[in-house]
Image (cartoon, rainbow over all chains, first blue to last red; front, side, top):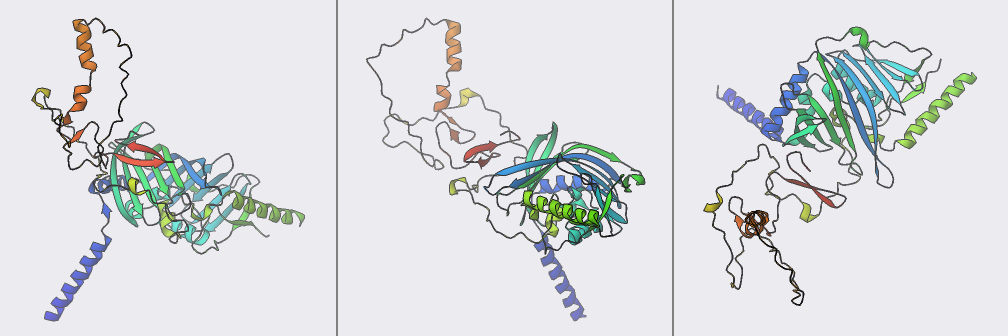
Length: 260
Length: 175
């Protein structure tokens, strides 16, 4: 009996230590606001959004250059995604229907399809690990946005109310080992994320990714046909080549013409 | 066959072009998910640390959740705390890092002083209202600050950051 008690105390001690290690330095208010936004998002069965995204690139001289794109995203939990990203230089579409992920390069009229797992979460993992595919703002589409966002957070703080596109928002900032990120969450009954910034602080020049979400549409249902890829006229199918870099990745699907 | 070769060449050129124009693709994630799943970034370029005088001071509380608005108390109850006129050493509060030293003012006594304007009661009241000198001379008892003092940290709720060497201050969404 005593041995069992000792084992029980030991397990409690280990669990306590593990819990203490997992504690982060997130201020209560920042944690509360982020959690409410993430839970609101997670409970939404389907949503659409429009966003303007900016990426900074640092040239050889150290100058930061910003490139912008517009994107639309339709999400149906847990197995539907459609994303369109366009700029004057490129236009890409992503379709995921619970079985396959298709990427279309509208400029070259190439597309590539590959089998994927049955959920968005696993598909994002597979797309990243196997092909190095970067789909922006997928943090909003995962099943548990809060756990995804805070998985590697070391600290978080609340910086008061700040307007984003005319909407009064809570300004939160978080730090991680590899990146810092900020989020602006609408102050109101709908805690929607209105702005999102990721700073690659360990990269030369600390380039940033910025997303301004210009339109939200929270809905109960989006038609399944929206997530099924329809081949454009004259489109060529190409092979999706696995990412060969170890841990590295690109933000474009690395493809080679299909040999038929 | 020619078409296939052409496709290969076109694809290769496209990939090369993408690589040439996007040198930072390696860590160009647009999501936390992508960043978290990537290998930890190599610290090829350590994050530049701000100069010592720009380092965040321990006294700064970066969480201006609800700034405390303190209503000023009636002015008549304030007794200005002025240093004695002929004191050898002005009394310095503990938190004053360095007093502001005004350069000596050269007074041109030979210059003809302008004639004083005719003062009407209304003009006198307006002049007194615009004259902030009495306010500047006294301490603000509720915040431990007074005009001319130099402080080694920002007031609560303010954040300072530098852009190309120029300081910016942020408070409640206002820069």
